Length: 433
Image 1 (tube, helix red, strand yellow):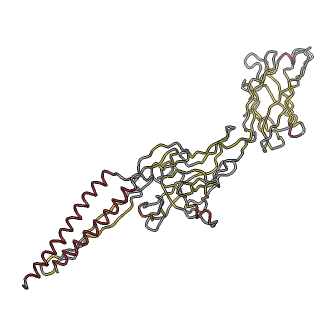
Image 2 (image 1 turned 90 degrees about the vertical axis):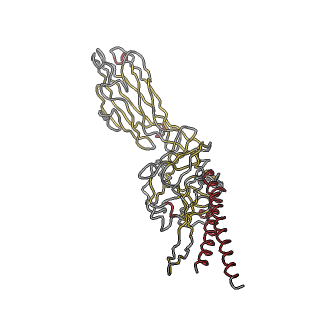
Image 3 (image 1 turned 135 degrees about the horizontal axis):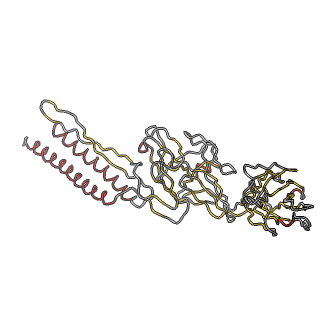
């Protein structure tokens, strides 16, 4: 019984070391595989106890575990949508076959790195067929509230590379100097005109025509102007009329003293703005606050549009897409527009090593890994997302080769045990001769 247990222990040792060699071989074979997670083989002794003072060898059993929580170093690339996770958390992905199946629910897999490029449908996809998932943004770039304990809100990130985008004008700031001499007694009273372009909701170019009509005083100076605003998109209809009175004191000469509303939105003295309605909706116009020189002024004898600024941009073509460290996917256009179109969350689990390992360095949550949660990148326990980067294999080739030498010696030693048991059994057989 003792001799046979020695034989069984030797066989178990051969099996365990063969399993360890298989994991070492897999690690070395994937030493250049981006995102590969090392497999570790551990040995566990088997104890059968003693009987009548004789010891029976229990042998050894091996177990393997993929160390998903081990991370490789990051290397720089030239592709903006090469992504890697720096720290805790994993990127949600799915397969192209799952997307093409038109299923209502998309199976979520997890990975720590990927080289994503647009496919024929515009989806960010790796060469091996993994599609990046994210939450779609609203038209204004905000991200709606999605459930964080399920993947139901995630969609394949799809980029319309031939898309157009514009941004309507909603705010305008006027920095204009009006000639003080035009309100003096005996002046010509010349009306000054100014046209300011803005962009409508459909990206069309429109104009607000502004007339500054001076009030000529009978004696002295009135320091008063009437500002009339017309909208080209509304057939040049008047959208606002205001009476501007300027200060002529030494301390605040040339600045606005008061603004009276004749028609249109009321002037807000606290902000120096009024809101008028153009054809596409409300527009805020900033003419400056009372007593300040950062808006409309009345100085000297020259009409001068000093500073005219506005938001909004014309329609432009998409030129590139990038993902920032917080997981927001930004689309850039040739007009200077930057739009947020998706957000990529980072998925975290209590036990990443308990996930089911699949092909292409992807993993599936399991009961052993625990319940997952979708975090904003850089929030909670998660790290951030690095673009222009890939994660290298977690394999240390030098360590694996050292382990291979140890495994080979151990395998040879177990084979020697079997050989020795065989010789002892042969001696036992020879007793009968």
